[in-house]
Image 1: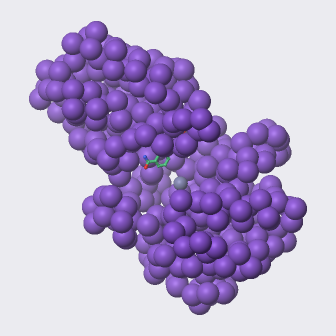
Image 2 (image 1 turned 135 degrees about the horizontal axis):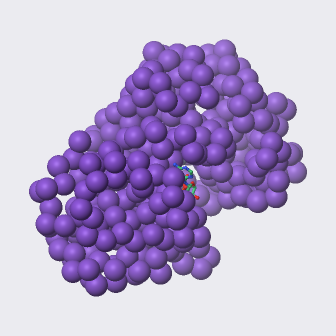
Image 3 (image 1 turned 45 degrees about the vertical axis):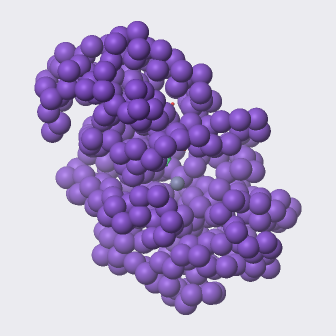
Length: 343
Ligand SMILES: NC(=O)c1ccc[n+]([C@@H]2O[C@H](COP(=O)([O-])OP(=O)(O)OC[C@H]3O[C@@H](n4cnc5c(N)ncnc54)[C@H](O)[C@@H]3O)[C@@H](O)[C@H]2O)c1
Ligand SMILES: [Zn+2]
């Protein structure tokens, strides 16, 4: 557990939801530390912007925080990304501790050194940011007890991605886990293994120039589905609005494992097992054949696709054997989307 006494003062940033659900748990875990000040921001991605960062900077200046102070970011990916960025830039950088409270933030946003905010008009997601690593990422699965089921599933998709990339053993352990359980020691082990896997990859390529790109599995097609923003899963059915990131990654992974089978020899059983897992837990993808042109055009305009007219994906030769930089043609993508829609 982190030693807070090595900092001159400790500040805490959170959002309204995490303040209510998670702050009392954290304070008791840390032994009721003496916090210099707490800033509670409204919850939600729409607040991950420069106005909120300015509010954090102004607050830190008003409180006379120094570079020897610590900022604790208590919240989901929005608070970890934005608090990390505000800390990385305040007086050229103050230390920060991430305490992720959503599953997605625990396995993904809380570690890995990417901080930032959405910026511009039209809005560019994570358009402004910096690479900056937290002094530590504190994992407390107790927070997951108040997390809505769809937020939990969103995080599970990124855990499944890590397991698929890691090894057949990690994948088997994930697939045999009961998704309703987030409080057992076996879940804590899965969680730690997932974070350790991401940290192992990031430590080899912090700036995303090589091996870190394996973490894009499911994201080429997933991001396009997310950008289309067709519908979201709520109250047991699809409704108008934005589909949660992890759901889109799950749909993207199914389509990309189909491509992996066709182009890299991934065994067909993996594609069918993953498709069944998706249908059972996430439902069918909220897209139809009439969306394919729009999805392909979104992927062609993705900045990751350097070659004109081609789309670059991370695919799998087998579980635990990813291959980055695979070029996929629009015709092959259309076939993968047709497969996804047929499920
Ligand atoms: N830096 C990275 O590497 C990285 C990786 C993945 C995602 N991200 C970023 O993370 C963000 C998404 O993260 P998110 O899904 O955690 O979203 P989020 O931070 O918006 O949290 C989702 C909702 O859950 C609430 N919440 C948080 N903890 C809770 C709890 N324990 N119980 C009940 N409610 C709780 C939040 O208040 C919010 O309303 C995006 O902005 C994305 O860009 C960053
Ligand atoms: Zn993701």
